[in-house]
Image 1 (cartoon, rainbow, N blue to C red):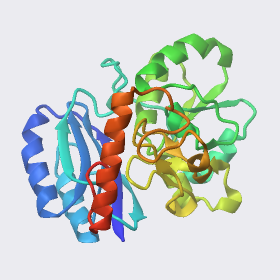
Image 2: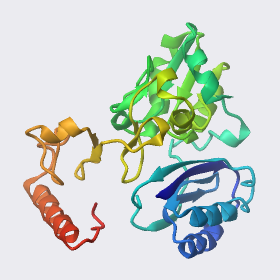
Image 3: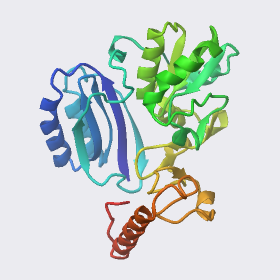
Image 4: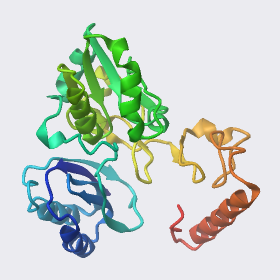
Length: 300
């Protein structure tokens, strides 16, 4: 089993580009794969490897400025979920497109998974899922509002459009691992919302700590690696990814007439040109040939 570690920390990095080389070398030495993003606002990413490898990389990250107390979430994977290791320097570690929003200066109130059910069940609380529509489609919390956004950049526009609908109710927000809620709750506080809360550790920690019998979660949680989805106990789900549009597909979706493995699904049938579909078919044949040889194609 591989260890998958999802991590982030909002902390000022004066020169994130100077951290990249050493971090990439540490990951290579530890045989860890995944993606880590560096920006002036901090670090974010998901990595996978052996227990020893993950521990080595986390130990190094904890030495970075302001990262000594960085939290992270772990889950198991039967296979290595990433093809390579990437360390990238970006403008933001989670892109909202609002450089004036700084979670390091203040966010909403953290709510532990053990207290989340009581909060979202209160009559004066509105619950908002800050993830994108392709993520919410396969699972969300009972009674949560789905903004229907295609990108996190769309969230501020959505909030400005519908903020008056919620009146003076308390706002509880959640996302996969917590990072988007750091920014979204910070943004709401900037907009004058005082009573705003978010799930500490995100959906992943809730699914890890709260048993299914006590859960208000419905469905699966989309994750950004080859596992595609996880459920309670962070057990890998049955979803697969459409390699054409990147939407998660349930087992029943694979039986629909619009589905062609590696080429299209019911979400994107008719969207791509004939030339694009032919390229997808060629890639799928290469994937199948690699599998016959006991290899993994990088296009998977």
